[in-house]
Length: 302
Image (cartoon, one colour):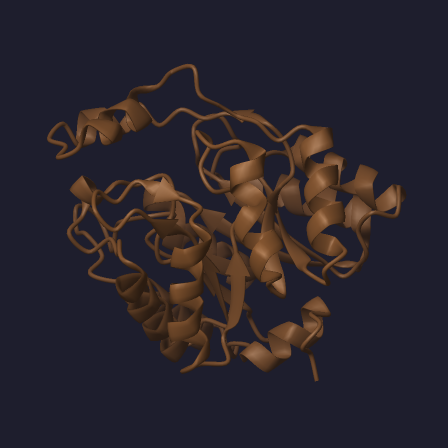
């Protein structure tokens, strides 16, 4: 089996600061979390930023610059900037950091979806900020990623040499990716991140994972690197299945706040270490940033 490429997402747009005291908010806190994850074995860090005052997700280029300066001066970890941002943002807001900073890797959501975060209100009734309740309680939330949106991001960011982590929340998103491959707007090797367990997307059962894998294999043959992430309590279970299948995996507090039943993870590093332990049990090594760059054909690959 090839070495496992582990991605870590230390913060994101789903969870809110009131849910966990360990969720990093400021650029310095996010940088510290990302560097710790890289030290534990993550080859890639997937980055969002937040407003330092109340923690709501933003796409502030200045905050990203501050974050990147701290990470890139201390680690060769692959930096993957979000173009997803938050479902509450416009596409223009979401892509501004990637256009301004031209990262070697950026995420790209491959289709629109209903996003149901409102069940979290039952588990976290006490929230510190008004924006948190509005964010979580919205039952009319559609994460908009139309064909026009996707094509715009592919052209504007791709022309700068940025390659993509294609985030696929359901089987149809794999077919959307195949459409853009057929049109010549993306080039293999494709880095496919299947996202499972979010309300509005595909489930996190093993049958769901295998269905996604079979579909990707039928559509793309050997032209893709498969990674997967499980939301919430499914994170380590899904990562374990992926590693056992010879694939790659993503963890981090963006996707799950937990380190076992009822126990908050004190860092994203803890989650990376759990996957490293799984990989060791399976006699798999973790890929270095250099190997990840080579396998994903990033522009800085050597």
